[in-house]
Length: 226
Image: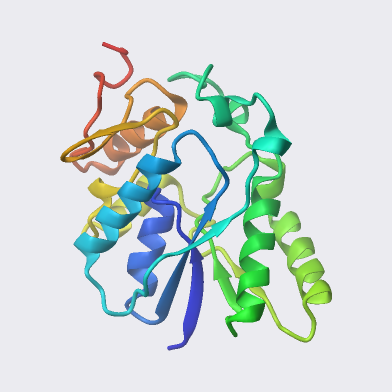
């Protein structure tokens, strides 16, 4: 047992981590608010997942601001315009320095709240430069130097899994409430995935490969935009 901080975005991977870790730890979900175009829906998804999970081991979400608009400028993640489409390569969805922003913010908070472990849901095959094992090893060392004597450990329990394997590993979790979309909307009943972006493709394909029915609510038929 013990307390861990989880970088919880409302996405399928980080929510799976929250649900799994809550079986063995006290979990403190950290939501880093960067001002991205989909954050309203992301927060709704996270809240709905945690309500469905209903675990006494999960503490209320801590929201930490780390505004990125001044850094990203007119990037599609801020404006919501030109979102990479269904079959866009993964490298096109890169958010520059994303892990740097998230981990730095989380680590400083952890140093002030006596939490040593930061857990995030990076998966196998992530092509981004700040998702490599070398990056996490080097950055953990930097954090421990900069925040000494507080100790920080970065854990990535899903690093050897693809998204379909995560879905298959946690069939008991309410993963249908999570969000994997870069252009979501919402209505009175919850979040709607766009069904047309790179992340929707990733989610839809993962449920198919896992052999589990995709209960995600899509605004458009997946892959067709209609």
